[in-house]
Image 1: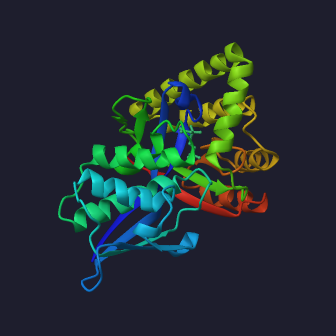
Image 2 (image 1 turned 30 degrees about the vertical axis):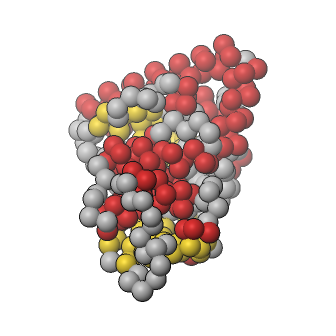
Amino acid sequence: MTAAHAPGKVILFGEHAVVYGRPAIAVPVQQVSATAQVTSLPNSGGDVWIEAPDVGFASWLSGAPPGQPIARMVRLVLEALDVPSPPALRLRVTSTIPIASGLGSGAAVSVAVGRALSQHLGRPLPPDQLSALAYEVERIHHGTPSGIDNTVITFETPIYFVRGEPPIVLRPARPFHLVIADTGEPSPTRLAVEGVRRMWEAEKERVEQIFDGIARIVESARGALERGEPWLLGPLMKENQALLESLALSTDRIRRLAEAAEAAGAGGAKLSGAGRGGNVIALVEPASAPGVIDALKRAGAVRTILAEVKP
Ligand code: PMV
């Protein structure tokens, strides 16, 4: 049996603008993960039995619809490894990453599957190839993903990312802590991305200026991280949140959680990922974290994760 894992992720700064060529910063979240287990099935014909109990999916590869994301990843991996007919395998996929909440569950499942399958077949895929295959699967979810999710999840390190360019590994000179709070409002990325696209088409100049503002925040955040001044991220989060508000990506619940976190001592808070629900992230000190978590729960967060971001 071969098992492999992939972490969740959050986007710290730059979501949405990253689809339009601006930079973004994302970090892995090791507290949640996807797991893929591959076992050989010696007595069956050449097919892969796929089971993913968390999403209620179970099927032979041969019978899975072409757009099923796990089956798509399996096919892409077999193709990349030049395996002409599917080997007799059982693939079990589980995940503790909440779905459609901006934590990268889809990309993490793809990366875990690609890792486990290629390792089991004795030819582990190098990270850039694994990330590229996971990107192909991301395209099922929405047509124009920036590629930030599959990249940060494959490399498992903080990254500064520009679409179409090799990712730059960020080394925060000082670790820092985030509380990630789930609004409980699921938000499919595709719909949020389409909403921004419509706004961009209708008011290109205004929306481009917002993207430029977000890009400046990302540059400031990169500098703060590299200089070891993570406390500067708080005000930058507030600024980024205001710009995401003006892209109509916030909701009452997001605002309520961000305000509650800040009132309880967080340095700043913002939505993370697609918005219109999903997760809020808040910058905390270890000492203020319990109070912030408590305030977020009282304000309606359905789940919180305390994550440490390290180089
Ligand atoms: O997958 P999520 O929910 O973290 O959102 C992805 C971030 C976007 O910038 C909105 C889309 C993209 O492809 O980068």
